[in-house]
Amino acid sequence: MSTNNFQKAVELIRKSQNILITTHTKPDGDACGSIAAMYEALTALGKKVELVLLSEMPGWYEFLFDKKVPIFGRDVTAKQLAGIDLVILIDVNSYSQLSEIEDFLKQNKKSVLVFDHHVTGDGLGDVELVDTTAAATAVIIFDFLKYAKWQITQKIAQALFVAIASDTGWFQFRNTDSRVYRCCAELIGAGVNPTQIHHDLYHNFSPSRLKLMAAMLSTLQLHFDGRYATQYVLRKDFERTGAKYTDTENLIDECRRISTVEAAALFVELEGGRIKCSLRSKETIDVGKIAQKFGGGGHVMAAGATLPAPLEKAMELVKDEIEKQLRR
Image (cartoon, helix red, strand yellow):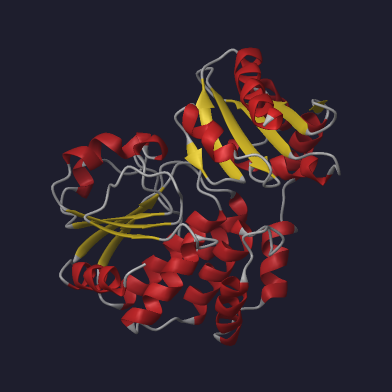
C-alpha cells in the first residue's frame, strides 16, 4: 500500500473536526478493537468523534470502551449526525455490510476514509487504506498511526492487540505471519498484558452462550466423507437459552476441530426469517467466492452472507457450492 495514501489520510483527518467512526454490522474483534483504537487516537488529537455501531457488539469486547457505544437507528439518528465532516469506515468497504446506514452514506456529501483488509469492496472511500495481505484491519491502523507519528498509548495498544489476536484466532490461523508478531511485540512493549486479554476474550462467556453452543452442536452434520460440516441455530434456541445473537461469534470454529473437516458453515435464523450463514475453511475451499455469490463477502478462509429462508433451502444452496469446489 502506498505511503501516499497514508499521507492523504493524515491530511483528511487533520482538516476535519467532527468525525464519525463506524464498522460493519455484527462487529467482531477486529472491528471492535480497531474502532476503539481509532477513537482514542483521534480524541487525543482534539477531534470531536462520534463512535456508532450498526448492531450490538459481543459483551466480551465492551471492556475496550469507557461507555456504551450507541447503535445507529436506535440510540442515534441520521439527523443527529448532520454535523459530521468526515466518515471513517473501519474493517468494511461494502454496502452489504452497512445496510443499516447505507442510505445515510449515499446521501452523505462529506469525505469518507476507509481502513479495510477484505478482498470484497465497493470502493466507498475518497481515500482508502486497503491491504488485503494484512491479517487484520488493526495491522493497517497500527502502521498508519506509526506513519502519522501519533502516540500509541497503552489503551490504544490493548485495543489493537485484541483486534489482531481475535482475527488470527489467537495466532492460530494461517494469516498469522511475521508482520503480525512484529506488530504485537511492539504492542506488548507499549504495555499490553496478553494473559489478561486472553482471559477477557475467552474466559468471560455467559452460561446462556454455553447453552446456545450445546444446542448448535446437537445439529452437527458431516457431508462429503466428513469434509464439510454444517450446524444451525434457530430463533427458538435464542429464546430457550436466553442467549443473544452476538453470542454466536466464533461458534463456527467448534466443528473445525474435527480432523476431516475442510470447510464449515453455521446457519443462524434471524428475526424476520432470513438466514445468516458464516463460512470457514482450511484453505482448500474458497468460501469468499461462495459468500460473494449470495451477496456477502470476506476472505478465502472466512466469509459470510445472508440468504433467504427457509433454512433447508439456504443450507442446500451453500452445500451445492461447496460440492462444486470439492469436485475441482
